[in-house]
Length: 234
Image 1 (tube, rainbow, N blue to C red):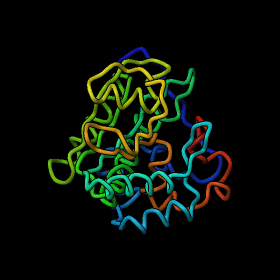
Image 2 (image 1 turned 90 degrees about the horizontal axis):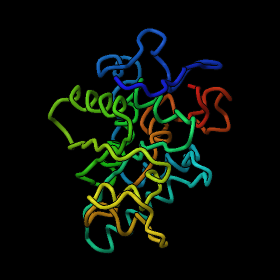
Image 3 (image 1 turned 180 degrees about the horizontal axis):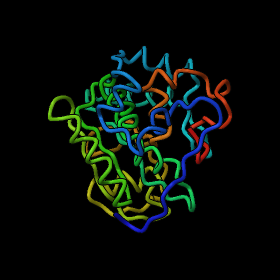
Image 4 (image 1 turned 90 degrees about the vertical axis):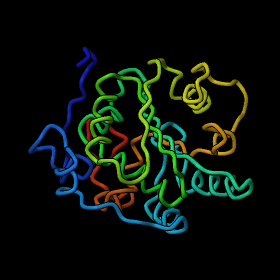
């Protein structure tokens, strides 16, 4: 275990993303299934529709609609008859920000469910979780191991902990074995990404909302303390 700061957990109202964590500090696979149930299967159009219906957005400053990202990856892969990949950006380089860390340490299967749901809908064979903290890496690796060998392959890659690591082109460059630095050019990762694959790249924060029935509500209707873009929250 590292000396990194640990996120505190708190909730206003009924918990959604933090459901079950009043009974255990981390939801393993069995506790996750008992709390959140099994993963649904959705076609690409159904996943886009779900993302539209709940107004699912990135939790960075831009608030980019996830449905638009899904459409871009689908168009890029279809236009080139290329495989796709799903990348979970768990680097979280913002100072004193532990939202992604809280999910990946305490409820990693929610994040994996969201990534695998997107991968199944997009037909992606490759799912990669990029992290920078040792304890987060171990938590996600444990979660992958708890799922067993069946299903899509999930890789966990640890990158240098820097403020710029989470920038899209820097992250993809690092995952491709290059320097973890922004390209300085306007490059759409949905078109040029992980190896030859256009990736669907997202932070952990939107993932549970797309994977769990507990997240199938518009963010504007959720109790204020239970939105995943506020930390510590539920």
